Amino acid sequence: MKKYILIIFLVLNPIIAQTQTENSGDPSDNPLPGGYIGISYEFDIKNKKRGYQVSLGFAMPQIGNPGQGPYLLPGIAIGNRYLPKEKKSHFYFDMQIIFFAGIWGGVGYGKAFIDGEKRSRRKFFGGYLPIGYVMENLKLSEGSWESNTFNAWHLGLPLPLIGYHFHP
Image (cartoon, rainbow, N blue to C red; front, side, top):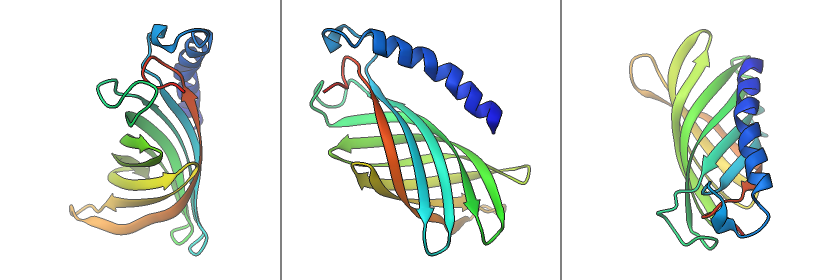
């Protein structure tokens, strides 16, 4: 897990540095469309399930008006889930797409790495400002989907990346 965090840091650091240096002046001069870096914590109080996630997304300039939205933000997410019933945690990687227009919602599909096995996973999520809800399912080996693998509250901090399409 530590090597994945290091890789993400090495990838994101130049993007953040370039965005920060180009934020002075007109956003339309920025070569990037803008987007976000998100850090979040998910928790289910009743079942004591918890997890964390780091995500990155960039705005699609074909959707919405620059600086006004709505925005469509495809991206990636990596994270970890701890399921106390099974007394184990697993790492995951997702491709996701988020729709943002004051409220936000989205879907994701990816892989979970559980006990050396790769399993498909899908998620649905939505919310308002930093608070939301996430529902995730894992695919069983016989091909059906395990229901309610992880249903939890989401508490996140999205850090905007200012660009020519996504800006205040």
